[in-house]
Length: 215
Image 1: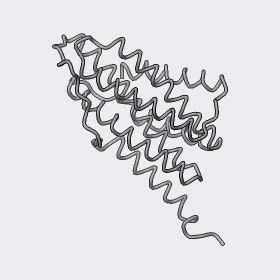
Image 2 (image 1 turned 45 degrees about the vertical axis):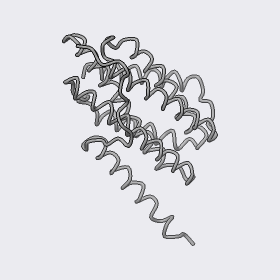
Image 3 (image 1 turned 60 degrees about the horizontal axis):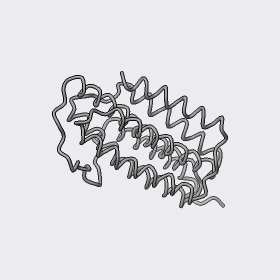
């Protein structure tokens, strides 16, 4: 006999996915941790530096929009309750990043990507596919994603204007969190992804970052 809990799970998952999408795309994100503050006060940025810093933080904000979609999708698909909680907890922590990057966008006078709904839906679909491949590969996808995000954040640290210590401090904290998420995925039983999958992920990331830097 099928329990009511099992029968209700598909509907609950749909509602959770819809709620997460609406909150990510249309509500103001609220961090559970205070925004990291620089030890060196930010310097004055000229217009060119401000525009570049804003474009880089827009890309980082898009990455956090995608992280919300990925974790939400993987939580919805897995049948392992412990793993569902793992994905949900990670999504909540990524909300801090979403809030911090949105705050920096506002402070720099920059706007979020106009294509955020497109990025979100694309990441949601990828997360669903990863989840359907089984929990080890789903976790492997998380580990590889976080590894690539770390590399991407390192590149942004090199490109940020020297005076933008506020953005630099946020990115450094994000790097620490992403490394921890990757380590947690390996500890939970992640499987190494095949080389072609990693290459495809890098290609998709390069496309997203290039477009989001401008739009």
